[in-house]
Image 1 (tube, rainbow, N blue to C red):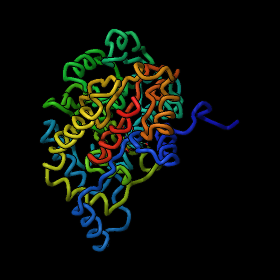
Image 2 (image 1 turned 45 degrees about the horizontal axis):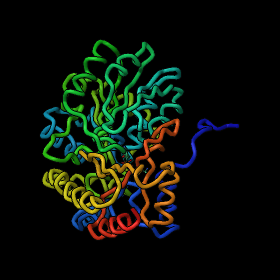
Image 3 (image 1 turned 60 degrees about the vertical axis):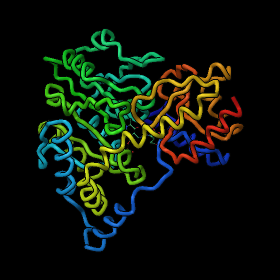
Length: 379
Ligand code: PMP
Ligand code: GLN
């Protein structure tokens, strides 16, 4: 038929959230908070709407927001991105990732991704006519195998997509990982797409290793982030991408015909809200407390909890409690135990199953406590 994505079904996040709702289960599957953002943010949106800022903003995004992004990156990562030519506000990270791929990947190009891989990457590559080259991050530590990366690079490699902190494994790359990557791409034309939507959610005092902070990689990288994760507003679908001028020019050629731009009052409100740096700086401690609460709630169960070093996800190996495959186990959890989770096999093309499920702990303590009670009672 006419399908460009014949093997693609409905994303696992939609499938599991729908099932959770049908079953009245606590939804720890799709990653989003069950608590609200601060009133002040909503007040700023209303302010800018009433003040008449309801028409198209500039194609690249509202200047105050691009300035706020430039200031934040300058402070945290020491790199100055030009507000006119190197920063674009997007309809969430998803659109930034999709547009970066669409702008740069030609038919027949190879794009290296690491499995488990966030589910939007490979379809975007395939729609561009590219070929995804999947490299496996092996359980339980999910570290990249740099020898395998070196071996996978060919003259056709156009791009490498990376994600740190990593969804779904909650692993975090170090600066030395970026150094290894930089060595491997040195002297090539390979473009890096760095998905850093969880940049502010890194635990245990570790610093986020941003491609924006790595001078050599920054020269060839699109660095993507999302306000949804940082300010508890995943439904607003606003993010941004930064890149050197030449790459950003290509990005904008597609962006202008993809979404053109994203909504004005929300951008202006976010610019106001970003002025207080404690809002993103406090996020790691905020989620670390939830991580610790959730982990201690499951400590008495027979789940094996893998390390969660960043993101708002916790992986749990369940082979001590069930012989089911992870998809069937998540369905069982949702229907019978009343807690929904994501099967990690959904992030592998061949359905590779480590018997590991992903829980989202971006929830109120009461939600987490009830979920832990149910899981403890069942296992
Ligand atoms: N990348 C990763 C790794 C994510 O986890 C998510 C969303 N949870 C996105 C991209 C998409 O972000 P957005 O909602 O801003 O499109
Ligand atoms: N990124 C979120 C997650 O990993 C889901 C976003 C979506 O549903 N597309 O759960």
